[in-house]
Length: 255
Image 1 (cartoon, rainbow, N blue to C red):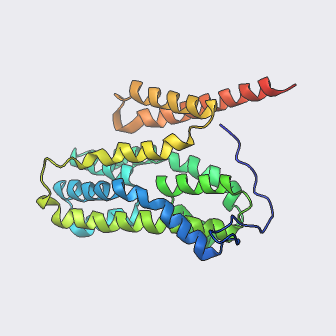
Image 2 (tube, rainbow, N blue to C red):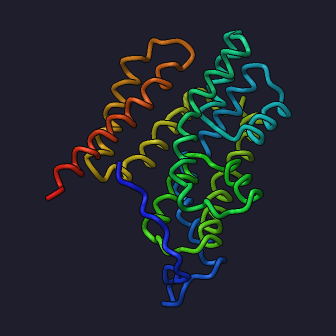
């Protein structure tokens, strides 16, 4: 896949609406505004988790502990489903790690942009790193490589405010009033639409397309493996395919 451009030590920022360099507040608000469309799918997704978790036997406190401490929708659904099937704790943990393997890839691609952050800043970024906060932030950083570190963190914080806090709040709402939601309202549409909305704008090169195609094909072929092992195998296959296409493209571009 395309290499991440290295940030330049330049204090100039993307221009705000008035033609002046953006302040931290403006950058924060830009991150928040760009995140708003995700609420269309985030709200039903969070409601659905609250409903599913309570139907699996969790009380409201346990649901909230899950959403606040784990803060990872796909792995939360995986864990609840496996616990409902009386799977062992080891299987639950390994499956959630497999589902969240992509977070390691997200973290690696953010290193060039956030390497100079303090330990405390890296800790809260790691806690709030979810699909939406990663997708919007990496696009912003690549589009504006001269952003300073405080502006990068401000943009990330703006995204997190809109994405993560509603996830917690609507998980609670789903756990408390979920039984009143009619069964014919299909809330489970939210997960696939969320991922499509994040991934589609990022498929810009043949390497990206190859990685996506191989990972999807691998996931489908290996879907029968237990405990999410198919995802654990398909993800590195997709990365390897993307790296191979990128390497071949570079060799072809050389004089």
